[in-house]
Image (cartoon, rainbow, N blue to C red; front, side):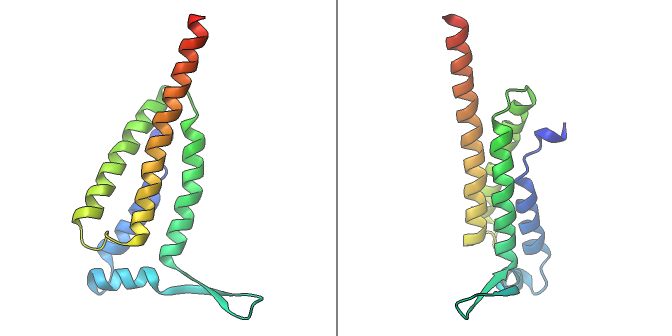
Length: 138
């Protein structure tokens, strides 16, 4: 039954934990997401600075890839996954609009990934159902 759980709940939960339990309040937590975690020296002579928010976005992109792979499944558990993804999207949207600390570009990009997961799941399900109907009818 764990396969029904949307993987994108992980970056949303990590973001929520950082914002809601951050030292120094919401402003301190937002700053913690932007502060450099490490810097990678580049051949150009500069450095690529990576913050906690960037790491969360990278994790979300990887998990979105696996969610898109899961959405191609035609198992009955896929319907539960789509429903849970929709609930996650609505909860994330409400947090983005109403909760201080969630109205950031980082969370907006995570929200967009959750929305793409919802759309991809429903579109793939509709297309596969249409193909099953065409195959069965003709």
